[in-house]
Image (cartoon, rainbow, N blue to C red; front, side):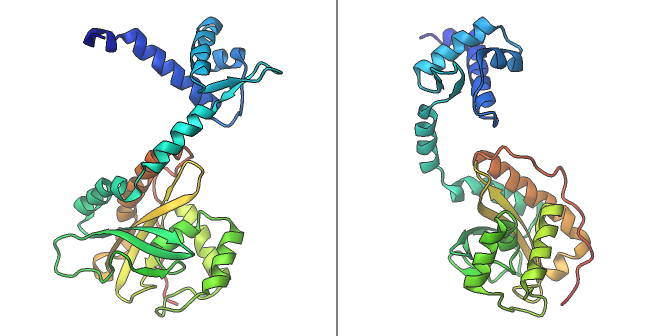
Length: 275
């Protein structure tokens, strides 16, 4: 096949329209008729029929013989499973972490929630003299870390309750949240403003901002945080830093297949208080 043929505008348009059909069927309506697809995409019914026949041949869509309606095919599940198996969250996150460090010049972490605890799987430090004591492979409680609270805020309440039953609410500093009611109020604030804050709750003199990375199913698969000495990260700087962290988490979530809504801009936090 010649180069001119591979760059044919018609073939690009066909691909674009075929993927548009898949997006419609994946949008939550479960299935659709030819007429509904044509109306949604503003295409001729005959055009949609030709495209659907091709997709059906590749098992990317399947037609219900009883209703004549179309839905996504199992071939997509097969391809998606292969893609997920090849997806390495640490490698994918690296460029995003590096960008935060470039923008803010502070330490950045990538963590996952493992058996109800936060596990650090990557860390990038700037060239500063005052550095964080965290390290890759270290674990921390979820209830008092920015990354932990960011991920807990994405879980069902019963899942949070189960984690609290297993791990409790250990006090790490004078600012650590130590009651379930207070933690749930904090998780509500995380959801409202779009990011989490560790206000010297794990280590005195260290403040952090975190945001969750969400996968295609809406589940938290990781979280990104920025950590700095409290004197370099005062309350009035939190929302600026949160913008960089949230942008990275959003882009990585989209790479992971998440297609849900996002808060447009991080919200200024209420006055931080010591406990």
